[in-house]
Image (tube, rainbow, N blue to C red; front, top):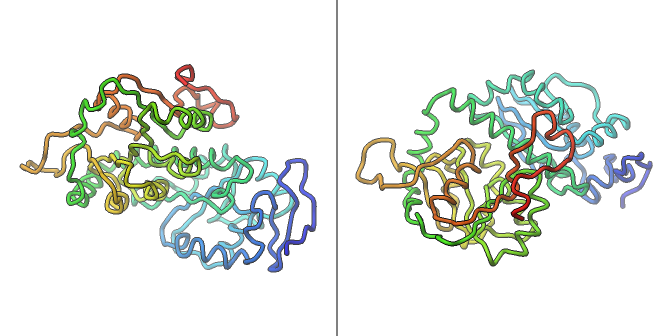
Length: 361
């Protein structure tokens, strides 16, 4: 049984509750997650060793009412590992007012959306990107998102980390891309050029991870039979929750972070076709059980096995999906969640929505 011991403030996070194990948490954030199992046992079951690898930077969306942060502080932390927790502003304020974050720690911080770029610099994120040691993790409250704020926060964090990773990978040169290309050679069997100009006269809806995707999904569901659906891999979890299975799912990033934010795509059926760059992270490529089309060259050297193929346009997976819509011959392209008009000052401080191409929906 969960005993209500306090009332939450005006921020509507629900009552502050306690379970039989002494864990205190906001009920509306975690509901019954800790009702039958203590936080420590639940975190060890859900996360295992994921958060305890040496020389990694973990960016964690949500703190589970501070319990996940406190759990880490109770453990001996691995050498060289640091943690940045990010909470919506109103949740962060409530956690502080109820003293659920505990004392400050030089290796663990909890900040709001405006402060986390500064913490990336303070924690020397560039050095972690150089060794491919940055990962994005969703706390239990962010996975459940009962307050309807964590999904957008998680998308933003994943997008920023993906952009930073692309930048630092480019600074290092092409070694990482060549290594992935060789690792994927056995799985890269069908070139995407097989579908060149195959969809003349058809309409495609490209689903990306921008804030306006929420508003576009009802339209996608309503018109699902009238269009082909392209989706970037990192929104797979949201599509599964909405009951939408794309016709094509796209991924291009070579890093392990890409797998962390895209692994839900492996739950799509074999009806979905995976379109990936030749250098996409091998853990996605090798585990895909359906049809897969690769972009670019199969090998980084001249070979008869290098079929003529479509190029892997970058720098983002959305750019690649848009380019493939053109190469596949679609006559009409509808953009959903492709939000191109946010200024640095506006996004994502306010939950305002300005969407390019909204008229098309």
